[in-house]
Image (cartoon, rainbow, N blue to C red; front, side, top):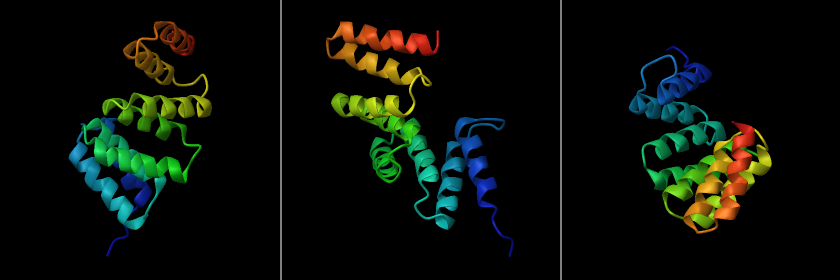
Length: 144
């Protein structure tokens, strides 16, 4: 019996998930993530990737469960907070989305323009355009 190289399988799953160097195949990516989890129970990085895959597929309940677990285990995982914010935003839970985005901005200051852009969008939707402009300016300063 041949041993499975978990890291190699995980990297392949990531590539298939986003279509990086190989054709995108989310079904194969999901299967590989699940296979890797079988041998790495509760691995937060794998759970994060699987959560983002479910977010991409619109399976918000699964994404919410996985990403919530990840940020509870790794409170300083900024990318997971951002993804969790995207799930809440997709579910029209804008207050929870903004809380998650705020945490992501604390952990990833001045590095990811999408986070303040998402906070700006929330404020446009809730009728506070002055605050929306503030976050839009932050996003533009990060990524003109």
